[in-house]
Structure formats: C-alpha cells, structure tokens
Image (cartoon, rainbow, N blue to C red; front, side, top):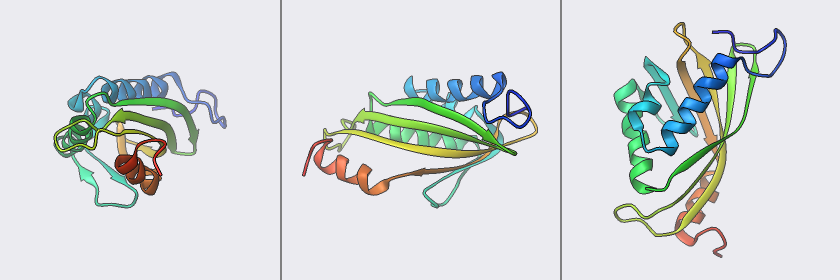
Length: 146
C-alpha cells in the first residue's frame, strides 16, 4: 500500500484514508470484528507499552471489552499522517462508562496509534498511546470531576 498521497508528503493516500475511516467506523458502530479486519491475520496492537493483542480474535476481544464498557463509544478520526513506512492515526474516544459494573461517568481522551502496514495493505502492527491517568481520573470522577 502506498502510504502517502504524494511521495515525500505526510498526507495519506486514498487507500490509507479509507482504512482509517473503516477502523474508526467499526469502533463507533460496536463492530469488534470489523475493527480486527483492519489488521492482517497475525497483526497486533499494544497500548501504552502493554502486552500486545496478537491476531484478529485477540484484537476483537480487546475492542469488545471497550465497547461493552462504553455502549455509546465513539472513536473520531482526528488526523492521519504518514512518515516513511508508518502511519499515524490520531483519535479521540468519547463514551459513557455504563457497561456492567461501570461508573456511569463520561470519558473523553485523545491518543495516537503508530501503524506499520503489512504486505496486504492492512495494519501489521499498532503501537497506541493515550494519557492513562486522565482516562482513569475521568472513569472515577467524570469529565469535570475533582
């Protein structure tokens, strides 16, 4: 897959943009298998340096856990950039933690995933980052809580 729309540019190609929209849409429509389908069969994702979820079944399981915790989960695609062989998927998660055992509090946290693309044009690996302290604080106290 050609990552940049123009050689040397940071703007994504049409194919990469469509994959990012597909991934964001899958998250926002409660489709864990659709999210996992954005990855190669043996693709993996690690969040904040944690252990990777490897393979589509594990990726779908992680997505499903967020979707269960946040039945109104939305992932917005804030930006998509490229550099070298990497794509940078910038996102914002919003939702209310009303799943089983949830706090009932709303959450809004932004992050980035650094994607390395595979031979098939799907994501081979993703290193994700977000402010876990802010996320945890919002889970416990809501968006404006002290």
